[in-house]
Amino acid sequence: MQVPSEVTDVSRRHAEVSPLRDNAYELLDLDSSNGTFVNGVRVTRHVLHPGDVITLGSATKLTFGVPARKPKPTFTLGMVLAGVGIVGAFLLAIIGVLGTLQRAQSPAEWIALIASSVFLNPIVWIFVAVFCAGAFIARKGPYGTD
Image 1 (cartoon, rainbow, N blue to C red):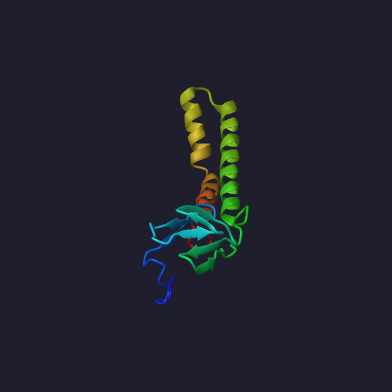
Image 2: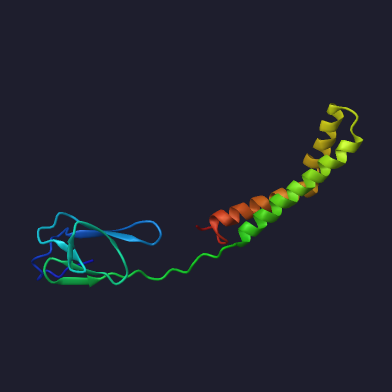
């Protein structure tokens, strides 16, 4: 923000606006001589709301506003893919384990059957890949950006 040079009651570093969480902003007076006011009240620090009138010195007035942001969708493609992947892999693993309980004669055979029916099952790995792709998309966005 540039203040015209004919304005004499505003300091070179008078105040600053800093972003907070959840689309909120804070106004901070930087120890100015003539003060910073919000809606007519002198402040040193103030959380701004749309429509607040900021006065620097005695006459320089600014109205605070924040551009509207589009809300993020509740469920994204990445979240759905991750959910399908983890549920599919989990269900196939459970089915594989339950199927081996009836055939196994010893603990060693049970472990070998679980390993072959769960970890060596290509369909389980397809679901794991779907989960990983979904988690990546959910984290990075559909075009690789946050």
